[in-house]
Image 1 (cartoon, rainbow, N blue to C red):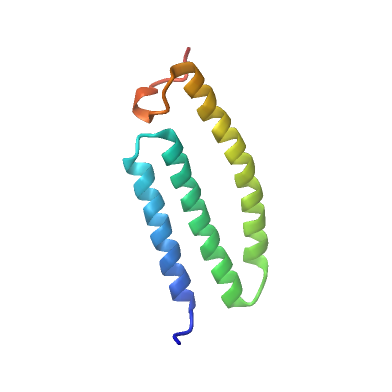
Image 2 (tube, rainbow, N blue to C red):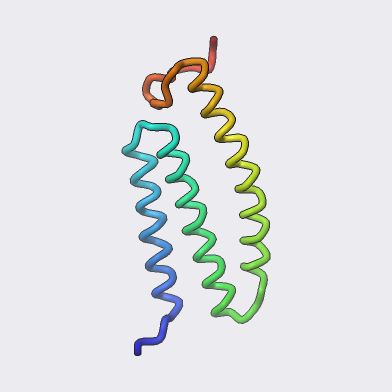
Length: 102
């Protein structure tokens, strides 16, 4: 068996971050863009936990705990904004929503 090293975790984290970045740059649906942003956030969390594990301390894991707490609030606010935009404009396509004016 091949031992899992820090490089393996960082490669997976980089791939997840790249996939999220590609989703943000290419998709037009606000929900998909929002999920891609969350994927990028979780990729950075994976890197922080990996660094924390391989350095032998809990600093990165504590930092990830606070990031997840803030991300939960972000999800609530982001989904509320997306629902409000859908109710107002009847679409969640980013290119059709040009301004926040009524």
